[in-house]
Length: 109
Image (cartoon, rainbow, N blue to C red):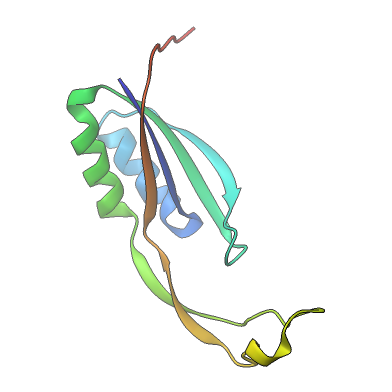
């Protein structure tokens, strides 16, 4: 058994949740915040049999889309102002960050 931890953008969470339910996967959703953009994310905890790991990874890949977004940088307070860029920059956001961990034991009460 494996624990799949998937972090996706909030924009993708409903679509991913629906796809997981449709494929008969149970998941726990947690609200989380990204460290770089300080934007809302959703973290899914999914317990899955070893034989279905590739299936759940494909569902995550299909429903966590990367996109480009303009981000206004935060001005440095007390930092190095020489490296500060005063105009919005385009960055890639979205997609999914996924961890697959072995599970020693799983109980459901």
